[in-house]
Each structure stands twice: as structure tokens, then as C-alpha cells.
Image (cartoon, rainbow, N blue to C red; front, side, top):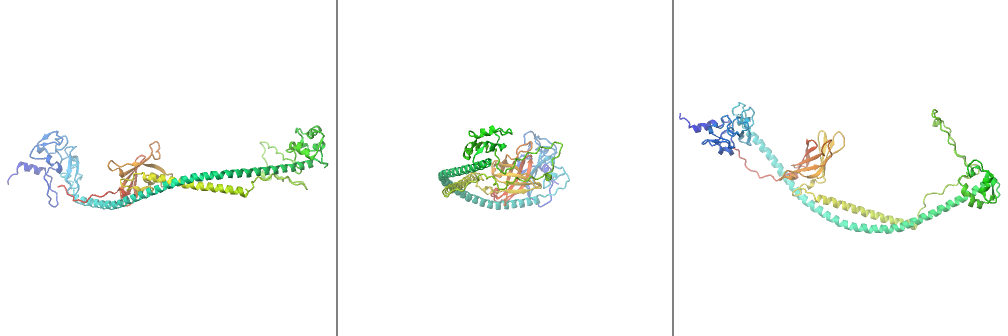
Length: 509
């Protein structure tokens, strides 16, 4: 048997054992070396550590002893704790693992090459994993294509909607100008109509006041005549001191004694007065003290019971009947009614005209307010950044909910995020619209909502909303990665991007 050349023998020793399966074309390289690093592992010359820390004989590569500071001389053994082992994983994706995981009894590479000497019996699952991953990628690609078609429709609708809103804004701005002019005209008309109305109302109240004063004077005149007739007990038309003294309640000083001198002082010179003089000189001073005939004595306030006595129960108290007028005597005349009489036809016409002017002005002011509110809302919406092509504009003025085991989350894009307990309780503000918050180069992939309700002894709540490609618009996940910081995921066709063209995949061999 012809002996093998030393160089070829060394290469055979460095190669991994053959795995069962169909024959494949492979590139000879030391175990654990990626194809991209193969030029650094040339068996015809000494091996230079990849970090330049040392140069060793090539036979020291994969000899299970760490010679290089970066572990690059032991890519296929666990000798170097910082070494890296490359899994070829033909049929799936290559990967690199720490060399310390080689021959540790755990199958890290789907082709099993990391356990070449551990007896772990790893099966080669790369082709099955690759197939499942390719199918998943195909499903995602199909979803992306379908979502992208919907996104293009959203872009078209956004452009049409923007043109419509701009047209509506222009119409409202023109309407506002006309309404401002109309409001000014109607305000002047209202003020012009209210002048005659105020004058007519004032005249009406003046006449009513005069009528009330005349009625009160006539009533007082009648009361004075009735009082004189009552005091003039002999009916001779003259009131004397003796007749006055018959009414002790008229005692001027209230000392309980109505003397003859007091009566004469009240009557004045002559010692007697007729009804006219009584009305002019005496009536004013006795009006409040003179009780009309038939009026009962004022009720006396019962003394309060001592503190140790219990007052009688209400049901046991004796009812006192109201005083009845004496037979043949009329009850005292009531005060004139306070109700304002109706307006005359001319005054009512002025009032109606002024009210019409007020109503027309109020209606015009309401219309102007609605136009101004509409302008403000449209200007705010048109000023929003809804994405590169306005594709996210359809989310504006919409809200989406997600129910978890404990809470109901509600997201109103570009407005606010809230959280409501499912077992009852008040709603918590998790943040109001802040800005787009995606990473550099992809800022339209996330929203940031800030300045929510403050946490107990903590910051204000805030929420990040991650926008994900989907054929429907739905809130699909809600978590709290850290205290008072929330993460929501919203699927939307607006987040779908055009998928790349399909290409053939090649395994690294």
C-alpha cells in the first residue's frame, strides 16, 4: 500500500467525519471554519492567528490546545473559550456558535457537526428546518404581497381624501367670510331693534308703576276712610280725643296708657278733626298701629318649656282655628296684584321684532362657530404626517381595542392610548400622541404616545405602538416591558412594503 503524503494525511485528520446522506460536492476546509475564512487556513504554510497575536505550525490547528489569543486556531474544538465554531448547515442557514459548545452533548448545529466527538447522536435536521423556514417565508411573502396591494389602495384613497378635505377646507373658509359679514350685519340689526324694544318696555313698566301707585293710593284712601269710620264711634263725622282714647293701641309712646293730653296732641288744635284732616295729618302716624275691626289679637308666643320637661307631642297639641271676621264686616282689602299686565300690541310687535333679530344672530353665530371648528379640525388633520404617501391617514379618527385577561386596551391612532380594567374601574390614560418613533431609516414603523397618567411615585405613563404588516387592521398585542412603559402592536396594510423579487437560494457547502 502506497503511503499517503504527509500534507494530505494532515488534511484528512482535520476533516470532520462524513455524515450519512446523498453525496454532495464540498470544499475541503478545517472543521468549524466558515467558507469566507478559508483563505486564512492554508495548510501549505504556518497559520497566523486572525488577530495577529501569534504564528504557529498549521498542524497546531484544531489540536485541542489554544495557541491564539482570539481562539482562531481552534475553530473545531472547545479548547479556546473565546473560539467560534461555524455550522455549515447545508439545506438551512449557516450559523456560528461559541467553540466552547463543541462536543458538549447539546446539538447546536442542525447538521450535528458541533457534536462530532461527543456521541450525542445528533440528527441532521437542516433540510427539514430549511423547508419549514422557506414555507414560512413564502407565507410571509404572500401576506406582504396581499398587504402591499391593500396599501396601494390606501395610498390612492389617501390622495383622494386629501383632495376632498382641501376642497372642503376651501369651502368652509369662503363660508366663514360670508358668515362673518352676516354676523356683523345681524348684530347691528339686533342692536337697532333692541333700542325701541327697551324704550317700549320701559314705557310699559312706567305706566304699570303709575297704575300700581294709583291703586295703592286708592286702597290707602279707602283704608283711611274705613279707619276714620271705625274710630268715629258716634258717627258725627268728627273724631275726638275721647274716641281716640278708646283705642289704647294708638298710644304714641307705647307705655300702656293713652292719656287725654296724648290724644289732644295727636288731634292738634281744636281737639277734633274731620275725615279729610284725619287723612292728611293723623292717618300716617296711626296706620301701622290701628288694627282693623275683626282682626284678632296677635298670638302670644308660648314660653319655652324648661330643659327637664318634654314638650307635648305634635299630635296632642290643640289646633287653634284661624281668626274669623266679625259678622257683617268685610275682610281687609288685599294688596294690588304684582303680576305685570300684558304688553299692548305695538310694544309686543317691537319685542317680537327684537327677538327675531336675536334669534337670527344666534343662528348665524352658531353657523360661524361650526365653520370655524370644521376649519380647525381639517387644518389639523391636513397638517399631520401620515407617512411617505399618506398611507396611514385612514387610521385618523378611528379606534381599536384589545381585550386581555385583565384589561381592555384602546388605541385611537394619532390621539391617545387608554387602559380599562375588565372588572370595573376608571380608565387610565397611557399617553397622548407624541411622534413617529421608528428606528433611523424606518421611522414610520412605530408611534410614541407620551405624558399619560402619572404612576405612583414614578414617571408619567408612555406607550410605543409597533406597526406591523397585516391584511386587516387590528390591535394584536399589549405588554408592559417595563414599569409605566407599554408596548402595543397594531397590524395594518399601511405597514406592508413591496416584497423583494423571489431569488434562488444556495446552500453553503
